Length: 520
Image (cartoon, rainbow, N blue to C red; front, side):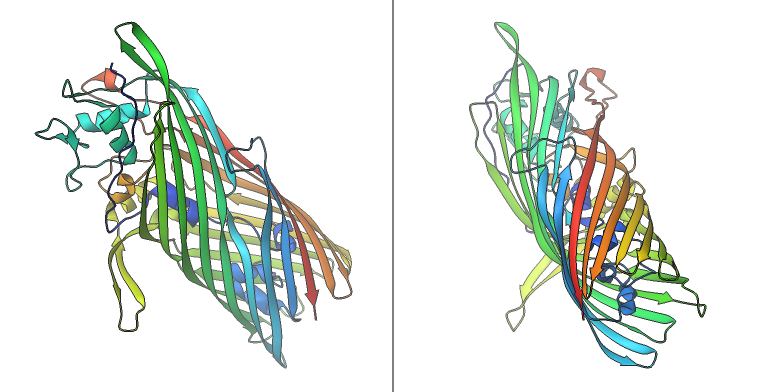
């Protein structure tokens, strides 16, 4: 096979874009984060309340706070079994929460609270590493398969491949491979290079900051209500290096050469949502209570930008793209139970359900400025990508359990546990052949089907007069199956099959949180 040194071909941006299922999930999910008390009890405070972090889960929990409070939380996050890569560090400082509750109106057994809180709902810091044999499969062989099946390019009168996005489906990698590696203009034919093995290193950095404004109160000493409006601020970045050892041949015989794809992507933007909740104490003189809450979708307006560089060690020329899109996350529903025994023991349990298969990826179809100079846009669902999302993702159940023991009024010990069921189908894959812009502008073919998440937490708190000091530790572990690209089976020519095995990867994370609060 002929080896062609690599140069980069840029693609022209379209006016309306949509993102891809696996990339969108990075924005749609949330972490367990907030005050040290909340994290130490596994977040199972949706019926117990009386913690500012419930502002973003069950807003009625704020109504159980009878004193005005101001506080902040910060700490460390460290990834186990990881090595620093590029701009990604395995251990990072994290500012996790800051907010206040103002308890002003109080009449008989009814009162009203106003509160504001910031917390980091998503910490993107993660380093992904994977490597394996390929046994002849390769990333560029997938491009060849698309060309063979009429999904990529036609050959024009000039004998060179060309694009017409009304008829073809391809991504940026297909563009680069087709123009520089997979197509021989002298022979007017398509070909591919087999690969021996691959390595991948990628750093994910950034966060989603959530700013919540809450109004809550007690209708009586038995019924508590709350409403929260949230603004979400997205700052995501990843940089990756994917390298294959390719096979080639010339007059002297067969030889190998390395080929690397460097992928750099950012996602930025904002979204907003509304959350409502209720807590009921049905029995007089009993610490038992139950709660329920619902979250609207988070309506995101996002911008993604990327650059892709392919190099054989000598030629490296970058290309980049940027576009706007919208993402509407699923509705979220929760039920919770809580019970206190005197002033010594508090027990909490929460069940939450979110159907990620209903994640709505949307094109921006039109944009305009009104008479006052304000910008507006309209959008519509990307039906093709949403069908892929529905087949790839599924409903997720989250179970939170927590306990707090107070041997004295000043001292508290906490334990918690979370189970989060898998969001990904085991048969899910990143489909790079979809006729949608989410596939056109993808700059990486790899994907990971993550399994269930387990979180174990513990904590300690101490109160001195009006000051509370709390410390919490969280261990989170998730396993997944990593694939460098989607599998392809050629029913007509088995030699053109392009199959890769899954590689086991994991995300084991340690978090230490310190909270300081003052009540008055």
